[in-house]
Amino acid sequence: MLYIVEKALDELESVPTEKREGLKHLDQEINDAVEKLKVLKEKLKAAETK
Image (cartoon, rainbow, N blue to C red; front, side, top):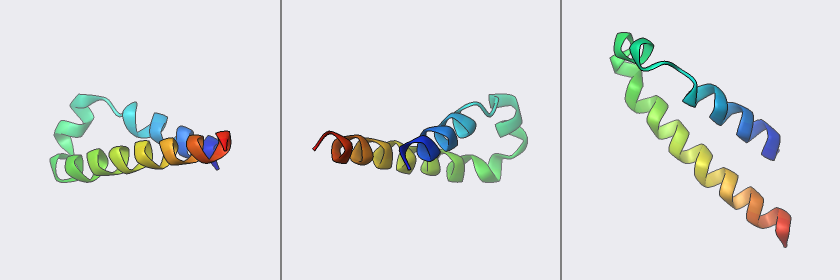
């Protein structure tokens, strides 16, 4: 599960800014998804170390 989250996070963060400019309406959704994935990643790491 952690691998899937990390892969999704990498994919979202690799979207170039210039492409985001062309998709302004999706920019906020992308940023929200990145933040949610970061939170999920931290939770999964914490659960993994327990």
